[in-house]
Image (cartoon, rainbow, N blue to C red; front, side, top):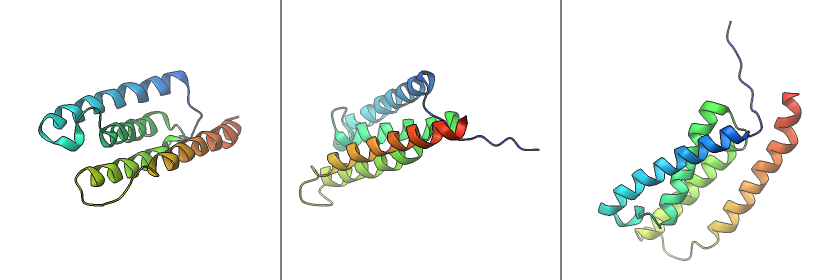
Length: 120
């Protein structure tokens, strides 16, 4: 018989886990950034990709509902900044930030609204 794990709301422990994994990923990307300019520590691409890695780890370990939404959003935004930094795409990527903020707020709203009620 298999155990089915349901999505849940974020606990302080799950948020701490996300933070630690994201911080480690950011450090690794920062070391890579010593050799590759787009991944320097202050780069938006490095921060967002590290946050996406943290969301993936958090989803697999804690099943935090919002991470299923924010992980891909952070990854896509990070790739957009990476492509802009390497001049593969041209133009302003400043519109990426409002998209990230709105999607993150929406993900937490959905988690608060639905995951919390389905767990009880």
